[in-house]
Each structure stands twice: as C-alpha cells, then as structure tokens.
Image (cartoon, rainbow, N blue to C red; front, side, top):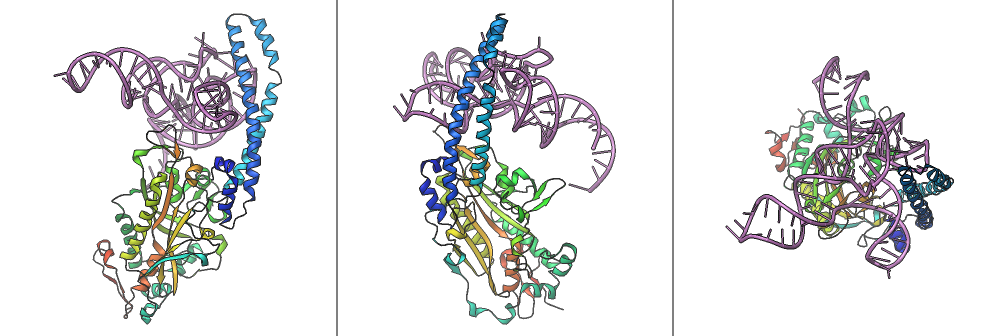
Length: 429
RNA sequence: GGAGACGUGGCCGAGCCAGGUUGAAGGCGCUUCCCUGCUAAGGAAGUAACGUCGUAAGGCGUUCGUGGGUUCAAAUCCCACCGUCUCCGCCA
C-alpha cells in the first residue's frame, strides 16, 4: 500500500511513477479528494468528543458531590451530539473503506532505476552465463516429461488421475533428487538465514495482509468449510510472522528462509505450459526473505539475488538474469530481477526465481515497523523476497541438461552430499 | 468435540463483581541525573503507539485481544469473533 501522506503531499509524482507500469493512475486523484473529506470529518468528530468528554467528567463530579439535579440537567444538554458524532464517524469509516479499496489496487511505485517498458519484451538482460545454444547434444534435447516417463522418476499421468491436470508426482530417484534440492537450497543459506517451517494454510486476514487478497482470490485455493487459504508462496506466512510488530533496529536485517509447498490455481493460464513441470498447481520452493532498513535495502536486494543465482550457477545450469521493466514487475515490487534457467529439452528459458525489493509497500500493509536508533517514533521496514530454489523447474533443468548419451542422468557435484551415494540416475534398462 | 478459567503498557501484575479525578496502582526493565574510590546498593526524574490541527511550542482525539452494543460516561456491563491455559474425549 502506498503512503497516503506522500499521495497527499505530492500526488503528481505518485501518478507519474504508477503510470510507468502502464497502470491507470486516476484513482490517485480520487484518493486525494476522499482523503481531504476524511480529515474534515475527523476534525468535527474530535471536537464533538472533546466536548462530550468534558461534560461527562463534569457530570461525574456532580454525581460524586451529590448534586444529582444539576447532573441530570447537564445530561440533557448532551442529547443530539451523539447522532451528530455518529454521522461523522460513519462518514469517516465509509470514506476510509473507499480509500483503502482504491489503494489496495494501486501497485507499488517502481524504483527510478527500473527499466522503462510495459511488457516482458522490455526486460533488460543483465547477464547470461553458461549458455551456448550450439553446445547441446541431441541426447540433451529431450524434454523432461519424456525423460521422466522413460526412467520412472516423474509420473504425471497418475498424478493427473488422482488430482487433475497440472499436478505432478515424483518417484524413486526423482523424488530423491527433489528432496536433495530442498536441502541444498536451505543449507547453503544457513549461514545467515533463519530456517522457518511455517503453516501452509492461513486465515483470510493473513492473505489480505500480504496483498494476495482480495485482488488475487482466483489464483489461490480456498477451503471453504474452515475459511483457510493454501499459501501460494512462503512469502505469505513469513510476512505475517512479524505483522503488527515493532522490531528493534539491532535485529535488522532480519533474514528468514522457508521451504514449503506452494499452491496456485493458475486460473488465467489454463492450457498454457501444461506439459511436465513447466506449470503445476503444487510445488516445493525454498524462499529467501528479509526485513531491513531503507538504508540496507539495496545491498540486501543484491545479496538475495546473488544467493539465488549462485545456487543455480553451482548446479551448473545455463541461466540469465533479467532486470524487469516497470510493467512486468509484480504489484508489491519496486524493482525485480528474474533468474531464468535454460532447459535444452523443453528448449526454452524457465523462470526459477524472482527477486523483489518491495520498499515499504508490504510493511505498510502488514504494519511492520522498527524504531530507528537515536530517533523518536517508528518507521516502516523494507521487505525483500526471492526464490532461493524453486524445485520443479530446477529439477527439469537438471534432468535435461545432465542427460547422458546412454539415457542416464549424471548428478551435479554440489548435490552429492544430499544423495546418499547416488551419483547418477540410471538410464533405461 | 464437551466442561471450566482467562486475554491490561517493553515485561510482570493490580483494577473488572458494586461503570465516573485510570492512559491506567505497584514492580521489573530501560534512559538521564545525583550520591559513591571502582562495582554493587541507594536517591530523583523520565519511559507507548497511531490519528488530526498547528510554522512551532503544543492542543485535541483514539487505543486495556478484535469488532459491535448499552450509557451523559466502559479496562469495568452485554453480544459475537480470535486466541491462550486446565481437565475429559479423539488422534499422527
């Protein structure tokens, strides 16, 4: 959520920033207008309350000194003020609801450094590593869904039978590889990030706090009977972990990581990318998350990006880093870098991480503050998040990239400590 | 799922039954100062957030789990919800 004071103070700058995303900024003008009405009513309410507090106190004193008649007389004078107060108070509630609804649908202002442009075609390629299209042998040009079936490590058909399309089931060595990737993703960040295993089903208000509701209700799974939502990412519980709290500056940056299942209905993408693991309703992910001061945010952004990229690099996967154009950054982000892995079998780039700096947009919404040392008062923290390791697509990249001529799959060196002696997934017998 | 107890400031904990000088006693913690050879002990003062008006000093308002209600007046009475604890039941 954007800062109402900033909007009040400099609406044109806010509109200009929002417009860089290609979003309609007219709601900012509405907010300014509604906000000034709110304050008019607030002054009125405060004045009425001040008066009635004063009178109440007087009545109390009269009662205590036994002057009941005078008290009764004074009480009569308060008649009517209540309705008036109620009228103003209701107006405030109503106006603030309108403002909130408008603001919840306004995305964060992109960083001035974020590249111009409205679509993914405008994303800026920051670097490409290990990618040479001519270097792939024929045995690598087999999509992972075919490899998975051939080796019995990925069973899409049976997963679909029990859960419907866009669900997958890993088996045998495939399941082992998945488990190794999760441990690998967590362990390499253990030096600085606290490992958390949060709930994956949360209350409605939790989803609202992180901005996934009400706007994206169609993208999430909802258990009606208990009014619980399946989280689309660990970002949801990790943000809520400290929602409403005031953190000590000394504990910032607060680095957290979590492995969870993530659940997405993918409502808008029926029929797209449905083969294999390209897009699934349920997947495992190691999420990196940090709360920090505005001063620390830039470095933290680079740190999370670096950690996510190193994990991919050390796995030996061809990848590239994109600096997302304003129009392609998701709602809460001010600046986002995507990491994409090249999958030679599927013959395409797969997004495996999206590292976002959300400035104080999420913190404002979830009310997460800190007390700057030596200063009075509190300030909103900055929040940052990025996938440390999104399992299915990395799994796919490994299986395709490391496929040998005999159909076996060599395991990347860095995973060996997690594989109990398994150095390859054997080829077809 | 059944029965009962409970939710107060950074923390502990009074107040609630009998509504009113209670933004809330007392203690701990923290900050500043005094005293003291050092430390400890002791003394004094201070110690919330948010909103709004104001150039400012400051004023006013809101907040005792959350949201409603009763009342001139609610931490205190009523209702709903959320959560915690104890016992029983069930269960990995």
